[in-house]
Length: 144
Image (cartoon, rainbow, N blue to C red; front, top):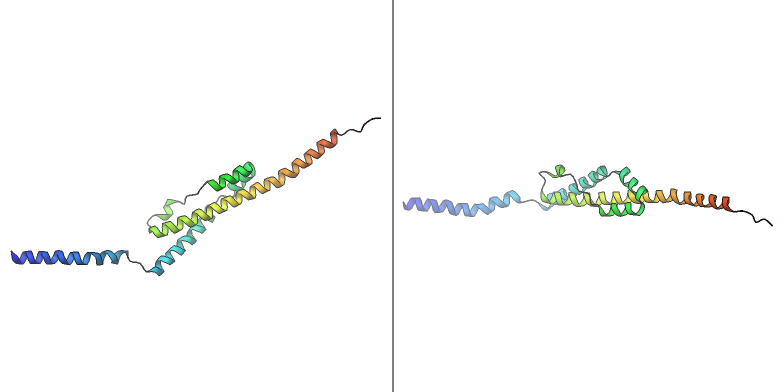
């Protein structure tokens, strides 16, 4: 009985001593691998954001809605696809999401501004020409 108690207490003590060693061995990463992982996540986020940005949509929104379209492009925050992030570590997901959102948001705002400026460049001269043409037709010479 004493032998059983001592062997059982020895096994429990050994388990208590080795548990932190096994826990640290599974979660330990070198700073270089974490930094490389972060850089690759940011590069992937930027590339995916460039691919996912609908240029025609945001250009059209800028053209049709002018300043309101630019405002909408600055308010709407894009979300990356969750399928791309399945099974990735939290640091990868965080870096990917931050770079994806920043790049996608910047691109959609840029193309909305391009659309707004294009609309202004077309509409303003058109209105000016229309006003000049209507004013000339209404001008009459005084008859003396």
